[in-house]
Length: 333
Image 1 (cartoon, rainbow, N blue to C red):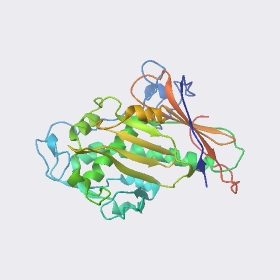
Image 2 (image 1 turned 90 degrees about the vertical axis):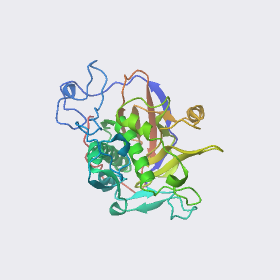
Image 3 (image 1 turned 120 degrees about the vertical axis):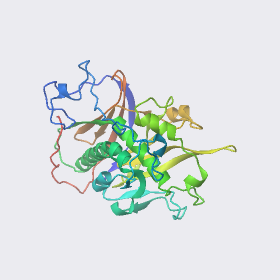
Image 4 (image 1 turned 30 degrees about the vertical axis):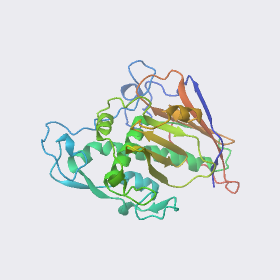
């Protein structure tokens, strides 16, 4: 077992271990200076590929595709894993709550890979968005590797540095949100399907896909970790807002092993000041994971520079009954 302790949050300058001529830590096979190191010679950024289908426009709106309003669909539909298949192959199972057929008192149900698919995107849009799946799966593999390494009570004390795209993880959680919404599996506490009772803003998803700025303070907020045993899978659940006048989907909560995030896409009814007061961290650059002997660091890159970046530090408790050697880990020392 491995459990989390209270984390620290601060803002400071970060000194990175990678040299311009070193292999890029994103595992592209290129030199760092020819890949993720930006023109300023200081700031790293894992660059996202375009997520919009290639020109020319098709002028076709596939009635089964939830991005049909773009008039840029293919005629064939994909059987899309709304929880990405390559992520499921890393995690093996996925935890969901708030499903129409679930008991409201049942918080999480585990589902296997083949049960989480639906025809909700045309092949053209599914192919354009597929890089997010691979990039999110890589984040999960890194976090799983860190979790498993720190669970060992070995005195191997050489920590590692890793790099991944925070932007890709944020966008993947949004893709997952729209997937479970249009697949009609997300529901209210009374088991009514959210697609029947709550609105969701497709224009904001378009903005995110096209890399246009979201509304102020919208994006990924990392929550303080829940104390106790860390689940061995990923969990997701929609975030909603209800008033007398309207009911809306405003975001998604995702638990990625050690990390719990709320990705907000619609600011209606969201208390951002309250989130900051509760020590939620907006788009952090650096996650530090430590036990008594070593610290591993995961750098999440975002658009912009790294001045006074948000850093979250997690202290983890190793399994007292485990004394196996730490598995080999890739990444810079």
